[in-house]
Length: 101
Image (cartoon, rainbow, N blue to C red):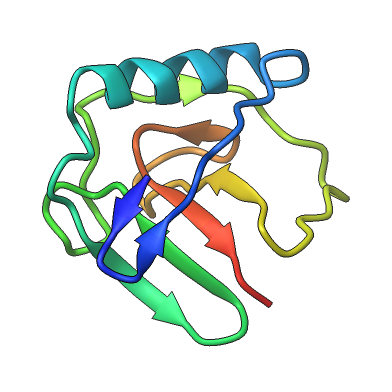
């Protein structure tokens, strides 16, 4: 991923999250994320992006279902899918977050 603050590589966990990983790869290959910024930045916690509206409510027009266990831990550096307020638990579209602290 290329950002104004530097570039980084995202490794997709296709073994544990095949649907989510495939969706993220598809959106990336289609250029969905190109030019999008991060709409939520909480220092020492997370940065969140992937919303084409920039408001935290947008997505690709569909959701995928792949529910993580309730006790899932996200260490620093983890990239995971986020849901909008309108999406049901265990679903996501294009929004993702990166754990920073």
